[in-house]
Structure formats: C-alpha cells, structure tokens
Length: 146
Ligand SMILES: [Zn+2]
Image 1 (cartoon, helix red, strand yellow):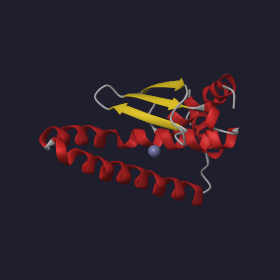
Image 2 (tube, rainbow, N blue to C red):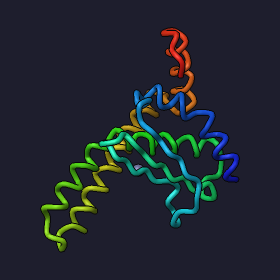
Image 3 (tube, rainbow, N blue to C red):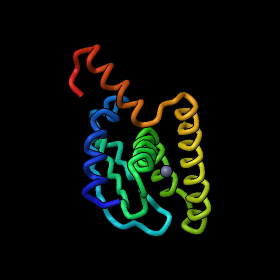
C-alpha cells in the first residue's frame, strides 16, 4: 500500500477511534516508514505525557482492512502504557544479564494480552469500522465533537 493511501485511511479513522477508546487526551504521532521484516507497525508510549508514537510500514500492509486491524492493535497498546513505566522501573533494579529474559517475558505478555482483547473485540463484531460507526453515533447522541 502506498504511504499516502495509508495516511489518508488512518487520518479518516483516528479521531473516531480515539473517541471510542477514551484516549482523546493522548497525543498520538503516526509515522509511515519502513520497519524490519514481518513488523507491520509498532507503538511506543509515554504515559507521563500521554504521548504515543505509532510507526506503520505501509509496504507490509496489503489493504484497508488489514491497515485498520493493525491500527486497532497498536492503539490498544496505549491501554498498557502504565506497564511500560513499570517495566522501566523494574529494569533499573535488575542486573543487566537478566534483562533480556525478562524482556522476552514482558513482550510476550503484552502481545498475548492484546491478542486476547482483539479476539474478544472480533467475537463481539467490533472491527474498526464498527467501532467508528458506534463512536460517531455516540458523539451524535451526546452532541459531542469527535
Ligand atoms: Zn503489539
């Protein structure tokens, strides 16, 4: 997928997703660039400043549906941002030799948790387009601006 197309799609949904997820106060920077093979996107968060950086590799994403799945996945990582802070604190106390093993466990736990949430959302029929439709309906009902 071309970067401009990916940006256009993300721009059209990001406000609705932020509203639906209750993360409007977060500053979310989205970058479009090449990532290592088999990494379609990443999300780094800093909960102290409610700042997230999502990096997306459009070359590894075939279509709109997959892009929206990837975006939903990365946005869900914002819910885990306090764990990122916890990890940093723990790592400062742990000997350097033990850190790689803890990191593997940490990242496995983070991704597994998101995987369960995604399965649950899919089971409930809450793919990104449905979430957006519900966000728009809720904003309209409560006369709020998304
Ligand atoms: Zn992930």
